[in-house]
Image 1 (cartoon, chains in turn orange, green):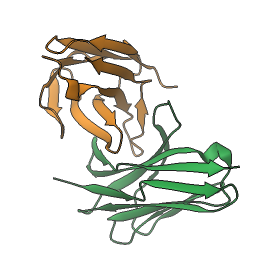
Image 2 (cartoon, chains in turn yellow, brown):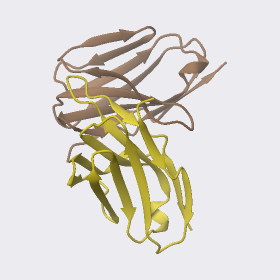
Image 3 (spheres, chains in turn green, brown):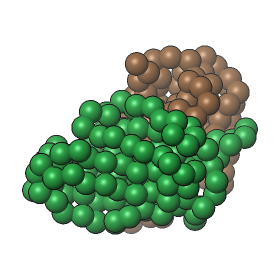
Image 4 (spheres, rainbow over the protein chains, first blue to last red):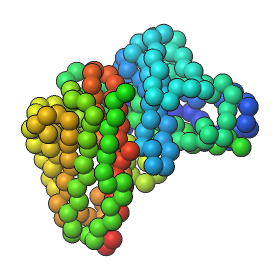
Amino acid sequence: DAGITQSPRHKVTETGTPVTLRCHQTENHRYMYWYRQDPGHGLRLIHYSYGVKDTDKGEVSDGYSVSRSKTEDFLLTLESATSSQTSVYFCAIRTPGEVTEAFFGQGTRLTVV
Amino acid sequence: GQQVMQIPQYQHVQEGEDFTTYCNSSTTLSNIQWYKQRPGGHPVFLIQLVKSGEVKKQKRLTFQFGEAKKNSSLHITATQTTDVGTYFCAGALRAGKSTFGDGTTLTVKP
């Protein structure tokens, strides 16, 4: 597996609380992504980053913010968690070059109660 | 925005039967990628197609990219139980950003 780790792997939190998920890479890749995966919806892009302090919104960014202060870390924050944000969250990095393969982390299962 | 539609959503086959999943984009793509996700796992890259009409094979898997670069297919010949999982296509309009289809979940009955 590519050097990409997510933490925590599982989390249960209460509605209204802030939550931060961490993605760490050891590959020094420029592009990093946060996706959520829900049954019947595949992988939906939340936010992505194309460099330190360079981020952009994906298709389902409402209620989420991100930060990338170092190349290796990409943080996803749920500012005030809601039950609709219960999901599996995947971080990914993408290789540069002709074949831009995406490597995914193991995923974080988040439950908002 | 860009949409990538994938059909069917589910496919149940008997071991040894063939399987095909189709991916259609609302816009012309620069490339398309395919991923496989085993139950409980994370998506794993299978292949990238770039050229119009391109066909690539990986053992029993055949990948095609349409002439207009708006559709693609993945065909598995003689499925095995190890083929179980969800297959996703991901279409890219430009470098660094792809849109994933909703996936086709394949189950194989021994």
